[in-house]
Structures are given as C-alpha cells and as structure tokens.
Image (tube, rainbow, N blue to C red; front, side, top):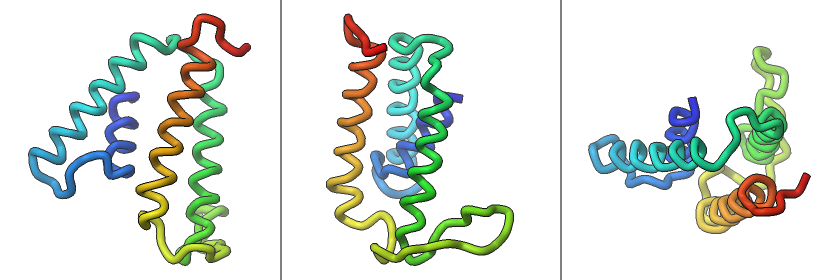
Length: 122
C-alpha cells in the first residue's frame, strides 16, 4: 500500500518526467521503491500518528481544491462543488516551484523530529 500511495504522490507532484513512457514510469517506480524501503526501515510498523496524517492530508487537499475555480465536492457523493476562487487552477508555478518543495522539506523535518531523531517529540 505504501508503494502504491507513494507512486501516486510522485506522479501527482510531478517528480517524474512528463508522459507515459519508460522514463516517466521508471522514475515513478524507482522513487516509490526508495520511499517504501525508507518507510520500512525508519518508521515503526504501526505509527499512531498515521490516521491523523491521512485525515489532515485529506482536509488539506479539499481546502486546496476549494480555492480553485473548480471547487471541491465536500458533500460527495452529492454533485455540488464548493469554491472560494483564489487561484484559477492547481499546478501553477507557485504551487509546483514553491509550495511543493516547502511541503517536502516540512515533511522530512516533521519525520525527523517525531520518528528519526534520537530524542523524538512525544
């Protein structure tokens, strides 16, 4: 499951070459494989923070979609979408060149402070 979710994240965050060829999918498989190996080695088998991280990620995703022109289906399966248009679309330059690297650094820092450091924050 970790490999699959990491592969989706690599593709969604454009951390691979564009397209559907070997270069693109090879990069996705390699990065997801490295991530899965790192998770297996460094993160406990049943981390208590995981459900909270998933829930926070889902809410952040919905909030992010809500500030675009398309909005987000907060009451899915109802078809209505809710938006407060602050940006025209996702995947813009600010998101891909500033926010994605910042979130990556923040993720590594939080993992270090909570799991990998010799004196984790508990």
